[in-house]
Image (cartoon, rainbow, N blue to C red; front, side):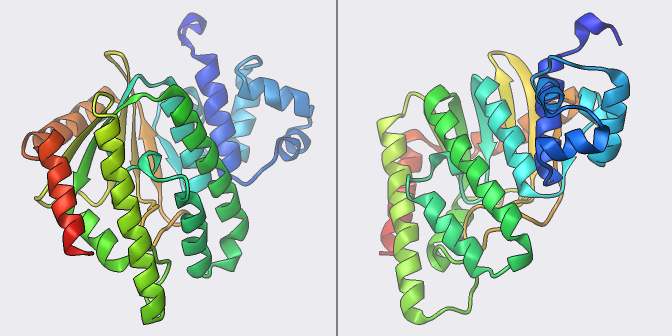
Length: 291
């Protein structure tokens, strides 16, 4: 590979995401590789790239050298590493095509992270507490970055996903009291109201399409920098009702074929969706049914 064609900064970003996914601190990596912590930080900034070190890092982080180099698909088996990469890509993107269930976390209210923490605690997975805390911290930083850089987001939302969100409420498990369910459903209605207001206030930057047809359960985002495709991210993780940030395999690829096929899928679903004011009116009517 020609050194002039290598994106060292992107390699460093992947290293950081994989390290976080492996629940390792910089000093842990430094100790295992017998290098300084400062060297680890330089690696993650793209300032110190040596193939022999990358090869050892790939083995330590349980990935491949080609994935670190961006030649192959990146795989993440828990939320913290995947959402760190999402944060990095969103910071670089000029516009994003987004299909997340029930809708993009970037569009949630300021209170939603606290609601998500409660839902994850309610799911009662004590063995995953450290991973959950790390994921919540990254999600907080991700939202702050989005509000700073504010890339254009083209949002494809499934009406069935919204209805399920409103019907179940912000719950981490189903066996809760009737009174708790009422309160959680109220919180879900508040989130959809916030979503509607957001689209009305930022209609130039936030495009919305609401599909009444069945849409894929596997969610994805396509990142572009102007007209240049950056990456496709596919995720099994859920940040809505009955959330999951610890179980599944997410992937990120720069494959032109994969991006092209998912863009065609997105465009097809978008074409047959309610858009703009029609989409907002559809969300309002749906919300009214759950008042």
